[in-house]
Image (cartoon, rainbow over all chains, first blue to last red; front, top):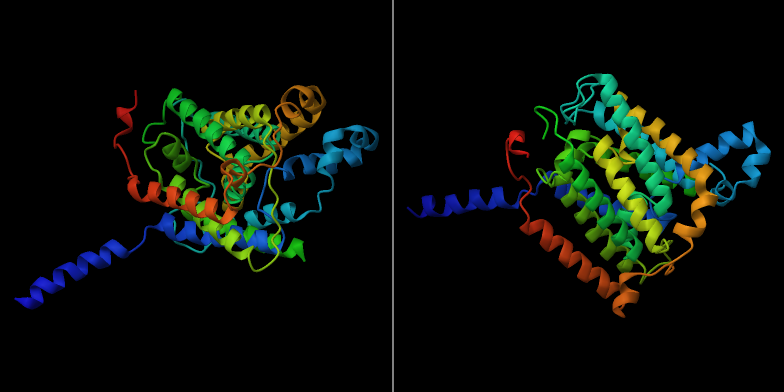
Amino acid sequence: MTHASTSVPITTDRAAVSPPRWAVLGVLFGVLSAAAIALYGPIGVSGTYPRFIGAILRRLTPDYAASNPYLVKMGSLITPETMLVVGLLIGGFLASRLGGMPYKAGAVEMVHAEETTNGKRYFNAFLGGLLIVFGARLAGGCTSGHIISGITQLSVSGLLFAAAVFGGGMLTARLIKPAVGGR
Amino acid sequence: MSLLYALLVGVVMGALLQRVGASSPRMILASLRLRNLAIIKFMATTIAVGSVLVYLMSLFMPMHFDIKPTYVLGVAIGGVIFGVGFAVAGYCPGPCVVGVGEGRRDALMTVVGGIAGALLFTLVYTLIEGSLIKPLNYGKITLADLLHVPAMAAAVGLAAVFLTGVTLMPTLRGKAPSAEP
């Protein structure tokens, strides 16, 4: 009798304390982002895109590159941020190959109802890519620099950016019809 | 040395983003449609843990803080443009690079689009600098400055609000995609 009554709550407790995946990964990412600020500086990504443009234009048209104030401001491609982006490529490769997640290499996920062919999906991916980096450069950072690192450092700009991103993003997602079988 | 640290941080960050599903456009759209809040909860947890940690560590060692200026127009308009692109592509500037590492072909298209967006911004920068970036610039302000409290107190308060939110909110909401209007 006593055995039965004590064993049931124990099993329930075990199930309740097993933390969800997002919580474990979130704590790890929080420690990582703090470690980056301790070691060299806050994590960020989107500045790498114009630095890449700068590196190319400095070879093709050195005079224009030297006269463009934005390229001058962003500076050399040899920065910690560029190395972080190289790391993202390696981390994505390793995590997808070392098992755990159901993922087929080269797969394309359709997310909008109009994406009936790979070509239409590629067009949306390109257009969205153009908008996210243009918007991030106008705002001075992206999800990493403004939202993760920014709000971690309590910045008002990070909170304003996050509100604008989720406002614009949720409204757009609501206006576009989801793909069949999409979530 | 910073270059090596950043490379290692990038590898771990890429693996974490892949595992949480941040490089999956379906997961991103499910977040924006409020069907699956796992990624939003992941981000809130990251910020809560990171914020308390950095201000705690700053009491014992020098930290490389770098706060971005709050120029209201550029940050808000840039954020809305970013949000629209986020919903169209299902990728952010970092996770699309992670997706390329995984072998996702649409992620490569987002990276190419991102390079085009950076080129476009570089070309129009001088035209919009005066109207969107220079005005209404309040500088590198933080929540602690706004509330006139110590940074550690603001960090603990922010973490408490975020962690309460992620605990109370359900992760999965709704079911059939046909329920969408």
